Structures are given as structure tokens and as C-alpha cells.
Length: 403
Image (tube, rainbow, N blue to C red):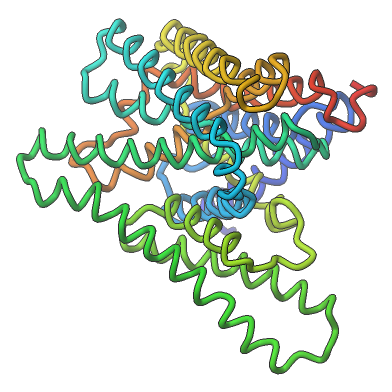
């Protein structure tokens, strides 16, 4: 009789994703709960540190797929950014810079108060600047939200992620220099990695339309089919870009954002596109949020509960205050500015960015996430709920009356 253990190990991830999808659909249909909150909850329950259903050893393939999932949606967010609008309304950029700086300073002071090492406090404070555009995009798409708050929230989330990645890379270079004294390694891990990642993202933006032109020469004239081919081409280009940057130990996040920004401003059209790349984006979304929460362990959550609660509170206060102060100047009512600040709390990018950087350091950087495991779990599960409620209160959700 064949051994069942290898079969269980091989099917653990597919079965977990199926369970997560079922729970997500049930929660959404019954109570309009964000699907991604259910995905995160299932991932945490199935994690090696809890029920142990998922394998304890981290698979590089799953890690790569999680990065692909994150970057595919990050490309979509970058594609939605119109830098010309920021030039016409510079207060948006000022708002992003101010609230990100305020969040960095507040979280850094908090971590020092909890007696965290200065280098760890700087790295985690940089990550805390980011509002996850992936979470925001999934909730906005799921609830078909539209309006000033929805659009500005996506803009600010994307801008803050760009800023957080760049600041994190610079601090990482400083940390490498401080620990190893190798200036070449420090420069490579920060400036060179950033430059090469931007270059690859730009190259993907140049190459993809050329490939589409080659494909269109053999087209049959069916515009619907070509729209589907265009959408598929961009998705595959992002996947290949992530695989390449992942293998070269560059930053898939920077490359995907650059690709999206270049595609938008080179006027490359994703014909008949859907936010989040339709079904492919939905599948990747389940994988991404299950993977993030599966990295958490319950004893770590309990051990860091007080710090985690303080981290969430300080970060929420900083972002809400920073965005609200410039609401009128940027052209929206104070109330909507306050709601955008409330919706800026989720940051699963914190975990993704930390995991991405582990291969650049001698020690495992995710070990430094232990004090914030509780905050990560709260932001994974409750963050999408807060985004959804803020959009409902802003009256930008069509079926808000059902809630």
C-alpha cells in the first residue's frame, strides 16, 4: 500500500487554497466579509505552527509564486497611476510624502521605546510606510467601489509602496555596511539593486508591445481575441519579469511597479482588461494571502501582542492624521480624507518585503518580524475589513445598503 505522507505533502497547498476559496466565498456571500480576510485566516490556521497541515519547510517555488501574485497586482496599481495628474495636483504627492514620513518617525520611536535595535527599528519603520495596494485593489474590485476616496486611496497606496521600497533599500545598504564594513556589498544591495530593477522593468515595458506587434501580424481581425491576447501578454510579461528578478536577487516589486508606470505613460493599452487580471488575479490572490499568514506562528503572535497592538494604533493614527491634514488642500472634504486615512492601515507588503530581503543579509531578516507577528496577523485579517467599511462610509460602494 502506498505511503500517504508524500501524497498529503504534495497536495497540502492545493487543498489549502481550495479551502481558503470556499471559506472566502461563504463569508462574502453570507456577511459581505472581504474574501482576502478569509484567505489570511485559513492560511494562519493551516500554517506549520498551528495545525501543521502545510509543510514546515518553505518551498522556493511557493515563495516565487507569491512574489508573482504580489507583483502582478502591483503592476496593475502602477498602471493606474497617472503622473500627469500628480503634476496638476501636487498636494497628492505632498500628502503621500508627509504621511509616510510621519508614519516612519512614529513607528521608529515606538520600536525604540520597546527596546528594539536601531537597525531593526529603521528597517521595520521603512516597511510600515507602505499601504498595501494589493489589499486595496482587491477590496475595491470586489465591492466595485468607485469615487474620490477609492481612486485616491489606490494612488496613495501605490506611491507609499514605491517610497517604502526605496527607503528600505537605502537603509538595508546602510545596515550591510554597518555589519560587514563592505562598501561594495552595501552599494550593490541598495543602489545597484534599485537601478537594475528599474532598468528591467523599463525593458519589459519596451519589449512587450514589440511582441504584441509581432503577434498582431498573424491576427485574424478578431478584435476581442486580440484584446484577450493583449491582457495575457502583459500578465505573462510580469510573471517572466518576476522570475528573472527573483533569480538575479533583484527587486521584483520595483521592477513590476516600473513596468506598470512605463506601460501607462507609454500609452500601452490593456485592451478589455479587468482590474486584477480577472481569474488569474483571483487565483494568485488566494495564494498570496494564504502564504503571507502561513508564515506566522501563534506563540510569536502572543509574545508580541502588546507591541503589535501599539504598532497598529500608532501607524493608524499617523496615517489618518497625515492624510487628513492635507485633505482640503488636495481637493477633497476633510471627512473623505479621514476615511482614506482609516483605509490606509493594511500592509501585508511588510511581510513580503521582509521575506524578499532575507537573501541579501547574513542573518534571516524575518526573524526580526517576531515582535510584530501580532500586528501582521491583525493587519492581514482586520485590514481589509477596515478598508471595506471606510469605502462604505464614503458612500462609494454600490451595494452598501446590503451591509
